[in-house]
Structures are given as C-alpha cells and as structure tokens.
Length: 133
Length: 117
Image (cartoon, rainbow over all chains, first blue to last red; front, top):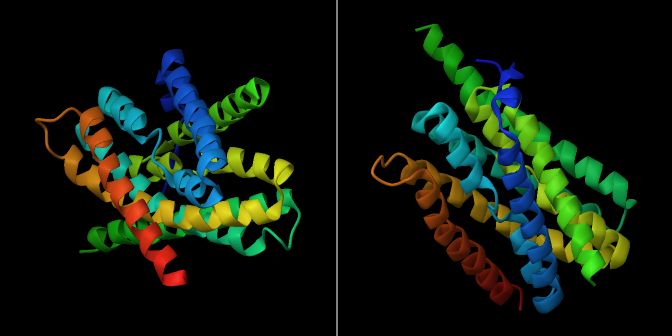
C-alpha cells in the first residue's frame, strides 16, 4: 500500500467543516497560551500535544466515509503522535542552538519523516506481505 | 492583550485548518490521520514563544510537549478502541478519551517532575 493523492476529499469538505476546525484550532492555541501564562511553560507545554481537533475530525470522517474509516483515521492519529514526540524532542534539543525558523523547520521535517517511515513499515510492508501470501 | 489573543486565535486556526486540508488530500485514512496529529498548535505557540519569550521558554514548552505527545499516543489508542463501539457516537467516544490524555499527561508529568527533583 502506498499513500495516494486524492483531491476529491478536499472538494467534498464543506466550508463550515473547515470553519469548525479553524475555531477549534484558534481556541486551543489561545487556551494553551493562557495556561502557559497562568501556570508556566512546563504545564502549558503539555497542551501542545492535546488532541484538540481529533474529535471534530473523527466525527466529520464518520459522517463522510463511515465508522470504519473514522477508526482508520484514529489509527493514523495514534501513529502520528510518535512523530510529534520527535518534533518536541528536536525543538527541546535545538532551541538554544539554532535560529527559531531553523528549529521549527527541522522539527517539522523530523515529525513528517518519522511518521511516513513508521506508516510505511506498519501499513506499506504489511500490505505487501499479505499480497505475497 | 486582546490583540495578542486575537492574533493567536487567527494563527492557530489557520495552521490547524491548513494541516486538516492537507490531510484531506491523501488516502488511505491511516495516512491522512497522521495530519490529525500534526504539530499545528505547537507551531503557532512555539513561533510566538520564540518571538516573545526566547529559547529558554521554548525549550521548557517543548520538554513538556514530549509528555503531551506521549499522552496523545494513548489517546489515539483509546479512540481506536472506543470508536469501534457502534452504540456510542464517534464525537462522544473521542471526547471521553480526553480523560485518558489528561490522566497520562499529568500522571507522567508529575512522576517525571518528582524524579527530577
């Protein structure tokens, strides 16, 4: 199995569904800032891994594609969290050493590279193994 | 203060929406789901933290974020199990799984804080 580029998903998504995600994302970013302001960055940082928009995303996937696809999306989110650990670790390790844009770009590359590699190992190779049986 | 909060809201909302749109471009859903766990709120928050508070603050935020992201893995696993139950609406099971995130995030954070002292 390989990832497929399929822009039809973008066309099928209604404006209010993007607006909902925009609102969730905005509110959580504001809330994270307020938590960090009130209780410090140690507590505020926890919420950078908070699954703010996953309930909305899973609900929309279920409405569009059914419960089985929502479960698949949740599986992808679970796998994606491992890349998020890598993102945070790169920022933690390099925040003092590199300029801000370099830190954030390097961390984003680490997030995507690790998630794509893990996805390929978990789903790409597993599918090939089943196909050869 | 209100202006800064509004800027945070717009920046966070824009980055979250952008990653959601990228996720819509891919199949299968296991791959698209990776973008549900994108560092969208983190990119917005850390960019502003770099600009306003500097690298010390960013490093502390990121250190705690590693714990929040570990809790996100447990949340995802809880979501997979809870979503399989066809009697419960997906939104309800996904929101109930927030309990798993809070328990792991704060449990690990307090355990790690105690171990570091």
